[in-house]
Structures are given as structure tokens and as C-alpha cells.
Image 1 (cartoon, rainbow, N blue to C red):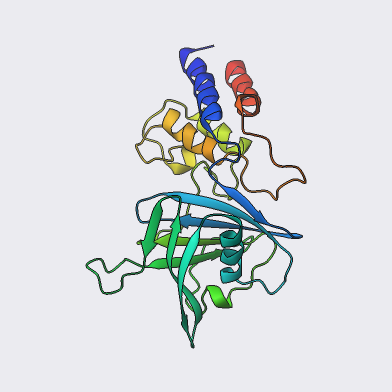
Image 2 (tube, helix red, strand yellow; image 1 turned 60 degrees about the horizontal axis):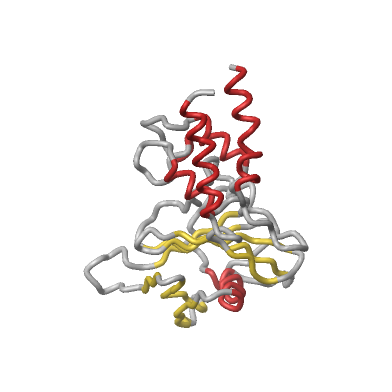
Length: 237
């Protein structure tokens, strides 16, 4: 086994042990339907939420209601007769971004994105979060300050889940430079290394409805076992 493969194993162990019990994401609500919500602040901080719900009339704003009820996230809202409730500010984990239409930055406002499988991300210009009916398997995102489609750190293949498929992509490009997001470079420094693995560890196993019991801590054994098939293929090659 080469030094780079030893470094990958060590990196997996470090990232796994550093990751909190529920990653950097949170599961909230309760019901037979499941949606994913991403929130990206102006400083680049990204948080992921899995929302279980049962009411078929739940809207995009309703998903945020459930997140507010189950976490410390708070929103600032304003009601417009033509659009319904508009979320103008979001605060969570020490990060706050608030719409400022008339400030020095013309992009200082929240963009609302939606995804319904099998479609990709889109900004719904003909309706807002109040008019969005959430469905099982859908995803919403709130992105502040830019029009780039949302991405979840650790999700190399952009399927809104962080699992062994993404780990295999990271492993296949481990310690290589000139790489992109889809090749495992999640922090944009052009290299695939421990920094990217740490971001993956924070969201490890996000993307599926929670099991009846709380998901286990994404510990060293979990990530290491996920990496074993890739390591074996690399050795055989």
C-alpha cells in the first residue's frame, strides 16, 4: 500500500472522529414524506436539513416552519399580498444574512431554489416559497448573494446525498491536483485532500429519511468500511 493510501485512511479516521454525532445537518419533523433543505449564507457557510412531514399541502415556507420548530434556526419574514410570505432573513449557528435591496451590494438577497426528482435545481420565478408545494423526495435551497445553483459539501455526484459513491470519487482522486467539485474538491483549492474529506465527514450519510432510531455517529469504522472496496480495487489495479 502506498503512502497516499495510508494518508487516505488516516484522513478518513480524522474526519470521522471530528464529525459530530449528526454531522453538520439536522433531521426535523415527523411524517411519511421527506424533503431536503439547504441554506447557504453570504459567508459561505452551508447547512443541510432533512425534513419529515405528512401534510400534502406543506409549502416551502412550511418546511422552514418545521426547521424553525426543530432547531435554533430563525427567519425574518414579510407578507406581500401578491406573493405571500417572503423570507428576508435567516439566522443559524452564528450566521445571519438579511435582504438589503438598497444597500451597496445589489445581490444582497435570498434566492429560492427548488428541485423535484428527476429534475435539477431551478429558481421558480413564477412562484415563491409560499406557492411551492413540497413533495416526497423534493429539495429546497436558500442561497444568499449569488445565482449559482446550490451544492452540498461532500456530495461529489450532486445527488443530494453524501455516501460511499462520493467517497469513491474522493478516493479515486486522493492527493491529486487540478480537480473539480465532481472529482472531490469541495473547498475549491484545486486539490483533493484532508480538507475535502473533513467537509464530507460533516455531512456523511445525509440524504435519506431518518431510521426509527437515531442515525449512528459517522465514526471511523463507518467511513473506513466505505473506503475499503475502493482501496481494494486500487491495489488490484
